Length: 436
Image (tube, rainbow, N blue to C red; front, top):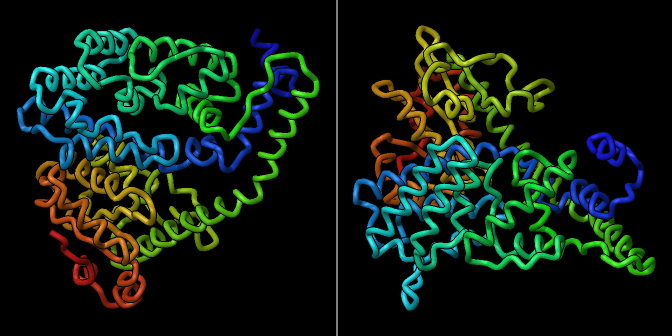
């Protein structure tokens, strides 16, 4: 079986039409594989979303979650999921309070709310498939009105190899691909679909991933109508029409490449700003750390991490928050000690929420040793967006950390002078803005 799969993978044209569809899907710059699954920020967002889920559990346990969705920690976490590009667009709809139907019934019913919190906590703590399934069955047994498998989108960010994402387009794509009749809104239907997804994932593993986001993305694109499935009947004319449709998708790649190029320019701007902060930190006498997933980005004829720390200092590397610390865009570390003097999150177009959560994780991971400066670095026009996020109730603890907004314009205008005449953090604190 494995040998046959490998042979198919190296043939110029596989005899399996589903394999050919997946091959085209992987190449399509507008499909979820290129646009979302390979997006570098995707993995970076996992930890911030997990942190948001933990905040939901903590508020429910402490009895301070409240009875509304708006302004809650759940809105913050689910909103961050909804920002993860096309596949999760609308993920928050299932959690919005529908007063006429009184669903989902986790806001006004305290027992249901606690059951939801225990479900999230159990899933966050478990380590096996059996434990995840047990948590789902336990929640399902309560028959909480309006709380269906849309919650699987939360589970995906806790266990991406065990729980596939869930939405209308994914279900539609699965039904079209398999001839099934999975229905929305029922956990047993979701679990049946999950079993089929695992089998498909195993069959086409060489084109997919252990991370079930990949196959969910393919199903999403099918269900959203981006791809027509191969005809089930042995009809040469129908198959030819289907092949023509696949070719049309490939020909659309030129147009989509323009959008990809624009995204690349955004990435380049992000890297450029990281380079400004790197050079400024070195000029001011700090050792500099570049986010572990950005270190090899090309910049100024070399790598972004040139001249920077190769590893986090021991005092940071052995912290519980080391994984988060390593993903912060730029850190300035003191020469005489291993303390973080300043941390910078560059948010060019990505979620402000994720940057704030990483700052919070850094602060919680360094109790009693807070950095002197925590800065959100973003285009000047994002100031109100940053302010709005910092004022959210879910981030009340962040306001005590004195996170400041550093606009691109001020950094670009003054960085040379700061590098030549500045000392420590005084100069950069002078151009940054307090928003709370």
